[in-house]
Amino acid sequence: MLYLPTFPRLTLVLSRLIRAIAWALLVLGLLLGLAWGALHFWIVPRIGDFRPALERLAQQSLGVPVRIGEISAQSTGWAPSFELRDIELLNPEGRSALRLPKVWVAISVQSVLALKLEQLVLDEPELDVRLMANGALHVAGLEWDPSTKKDSATADWLFAQREVVIRGGTLHWTDERLHNATLAGLLSPLSAQTATPTTGTPSAAQTLSLRDLDLVLRNSARHHDVRLDATPPEGWGTRFVNVGRFSRGLLSIHPGRFNDWSGQLYAYFPQVDVAQLAGHLPLGVRVAAGQGSLRVWGDVAAGQWTGGTADVQLEGLKTTWTTEAAPLGFERLSGRLAAQVSPLGFEVSTQQLAFVSAQGLVWPGGNMALAGQKSGARSPSGRPIGLVCAARSGPSAAIDRCLAAPPANAGDSGPSWCFAVALARGLARPHPI
Image (tube, rainbow, N blue to C red; front, side, top):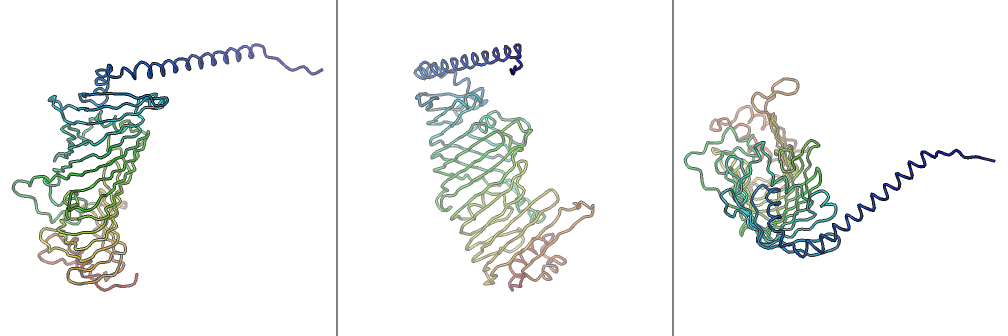
């Protein structure tokens, strides 16, 4: 007869462990049931009585005083939803800085366990956002400086929620830095040396008002996805869309610290007045006129713009690269423009660039690259590198001559003047690649 070995002590331990786990699950189920019952049958009908406590909790989370005018709740499924009306965020002086007519909040079991919201919906808010000359942001009168090491509790809370939605909002955007700076902007490597400092009193900053603004922000532990659709003012063009995908490093513990963000931005303008658009972007190029469509991709690393690509289809374009140079005019301009910047220098390139200049020069399409390093910058080998300009579809000899001997009235604007010559003159006759 076959005898199987027995382990009475192990069997006793396992039976007690299974019994303890079963009791723990039973107690946990009872606690969850009690919590669910208390939430739906005690808290939801009396949610208005908890308004002062919710105001204190919101103040601790956002870092600013919060006033809630009215609150109601509805039992929907496992977790209820809440509707808040006439919410006010107060500035340090105690005055209303931001008023939200209607806010809808949804929670779930998973979001409650993580101390977050499942969804936050803001209906028809009106926001006044101002970027000050020192880099600080004023959002509805509340100051937040992303350039300092001090973290914003409001930004951390906002970018920690699972989903934030704005429907039918209005945004008033003012950038004071653009009107207190010279041409040094995204394309400043081409024209920084020739920009004339602004004299006198800076002009008043212009405010851009966007209406019918819809925004969706989705956040996870290390990723942030955002989409914004808005309608610009009359004369600007048609409704446009912006999309961004960003990620943060493993060591980042503050979701609202933009210096930890890296990713890509995408913007599509089906029809836009580029002269109006350029007035609100730090391009470093003056645009006097131009109409057409734009698709723009931008790269962001550690919160800083590092480069981008633009597919353009424009008509009636007039630009000025430097204050001394004559304007560049194009009846039509289409193709792909790209730029990359780094601490060592810059690179600008084109692909399938075709244009008809204001003087009637026709260029059916070509590729070009212009690169350079800042003064004193050195390559990995330790050797200093100067400006490099190459046109794969044009007479490079003409470009070499303009680099070696820029015109007498161009001053230090040899690179930018050469770029203009390469576009408007040197590429007038196509050459095979």
